[in-house]
Image (tube, rainbow, N blue to C red):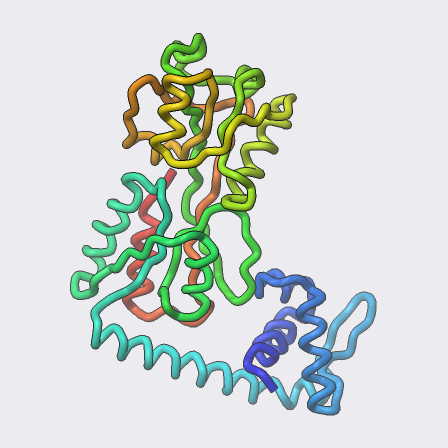
Length: 294
């Protein structure tokens, strides 16, 4: 019997619906059903009566329910106790971050310091998958992640959304505009990060271009910021995208940044945390993140 199976059982028992339980757990419904079936096989009794319309606890399920609640509550308390000990010893909360946060990160630091002046917020920059794994393993207390995601075993708390802007040559005719209709970039090569490196951003940009009525003409991939912006500013006319909060702090010769519209691509951001009850310092971080808006 695994803790994960007990958590799945408890969630289904609360929802009496496998689909809603899967949504709460941030996993697919088939995974919930599979783990419940394994638990039933191990215990030798059915835990739920399933029909096409209803899900009900069996007698075995009703007997298991209070024990599952006690076990999971005890595990949460144990984790909280160890977390509190770690904070007492180190006074540190570790937050996974990414590039392009702009002044939002500064605002989070200020808001957190007001709410938890005794704690130190350590920023850990890493790729998205490394950040997610860090939260899941406990190496990180939380991480800022972008884009719609399915992360089993984690909670994704909605934060803000970033508008995308186009970086284009300052000498281009479109540079005189305050905002650019996305369709007007159809003839310019797009220097975009490869999908394998950032599938969320890649898909958002490509889908937005298709919504605007064209398939992007891809140029060389976005490599380093310096090389890419130099190529845009002084080479063959091309374009790339940045988050608006990131572009607000950038300046590069020969390049201007213009907001996109029709459609207006936006990237949602989330705070990834473990589903355990948060201790005081993590609650302070969550509150600090929620003070930052679009």
